[in-house]
Length: 198
Image (cartoon, rainbow, N blue to C red; front, side):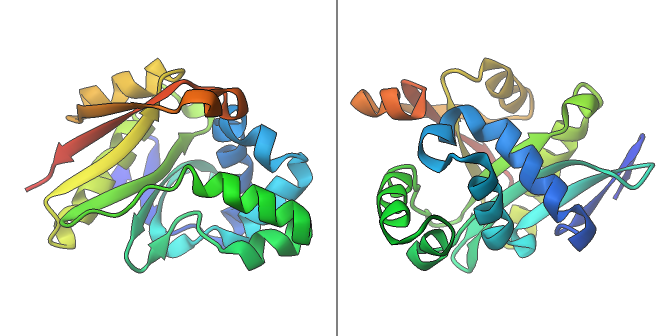
């Protein structure tokens, strides 16, 4: 789908995979660094498990990757992988404790709902409508699959993202405090937001 200055396309091209991993890490480093560092291993893990089938890309006029929206369904997730994947990068012990901690961030799927699994935009492309277009494309994807809503979770230290979601029709439906885990993940609470797409 063509937009002013960029195009949306399903999936992530092989040539954009490394850029997608780097942008993902930049967007979520603050939340994940304590668990997924060192950075080189975090990027190796992301490259191994990132599923193109559960993503929408924004491509600039120069062919570069500007942003990605990922989603999760019963068929898989944008950033999935299991214990064997994480152990193959971090080793048996390193993979085990990281896997247990990352499981604490997992969100269950709900009936008739497409679950967002991360959205990020290259800093050079912010303010150009890329995030808004990606969120609209995710809503279209949910509608095409016969689902009635999209769900995402936004952390309390990211008010800019929450403002974008609200502008795009998402409404807050609940907030969960993560307690002592805030010392590990760097945020205190996550707000669940939904957008009806029917």
